[in-house]
Image 1 (cartoon, rainbow, N blue to C red):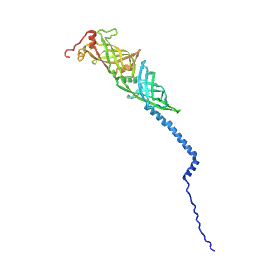
Image 2: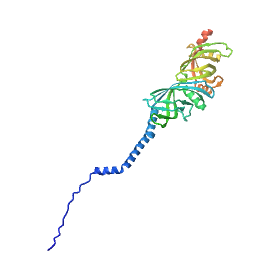
Image 3: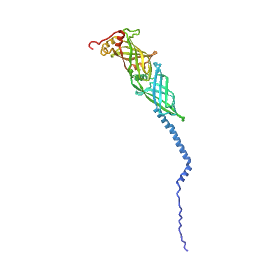
Image 4: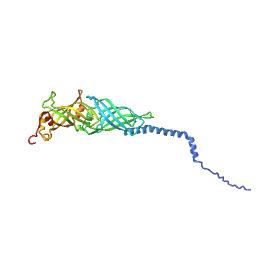
Length: 343
């Protein structure tokens, strides 16, 4: 009997495992790793928001704010210090729940290099309100006389100047304990005095004899101040010129120059010969004797203090003032003039 070997093949159906099952088992096995990763992502996101996003948003908010200087008053002026009062308005696009710490700010001319501060101000704490009025009044030492003199000179001679207000401070955002460092920097365009353009003498008198002070001319002068700055100047003296020749000195006493038109009394000792000669020249002998005097600042003294930061500014340019000397002589002394022969 022969044995016959038969091969038997057994087929077994292999069913593929579902992918979801593997993922589920993987998650169940490594859930702790995913939790740690999630926590790390959340922490990083919070850190980025707190340390990167919020400071940038805060700085952008400050940068977009508008600073308007409504008035500046320089009073109690002395050689080395004065009292400075600044009234200003800060506007932002929308209110925000934040507080800005008080800080020391500097003021300097934006268009002069190097940018040297001419004044320092202590700004109070402010909030994130849409509109805020910020008023400051403080004793102000003059740390850099040259810079302060330059500011006064530029303000006097120009139609407008740009002044930068800058300082570093911190901002507190509601709900966050951390304070963020920011830079407050605003460039403000200020109206200048335009060298007292429009100064006039609405009333004047001329005497043929000098008084006890040596003066032979008195009057009222109207000085326009186009700026928002009030200056306590004191007593100012001006070298006086007529037809490019020095003819005497003019004085204005107790000057406090406020925004708008200012009326001051003036007195002068003027060379009579120079005036009489000019009155016989054309066009002055034909226009009633309206003479163009030029005034250049010489000295400024306030309560015994020599204020060079004002006198140098006033001396940086000539202020032309037309005075009806011919009319005054005719009215006060019954003197008239005719043109010289050959004129």
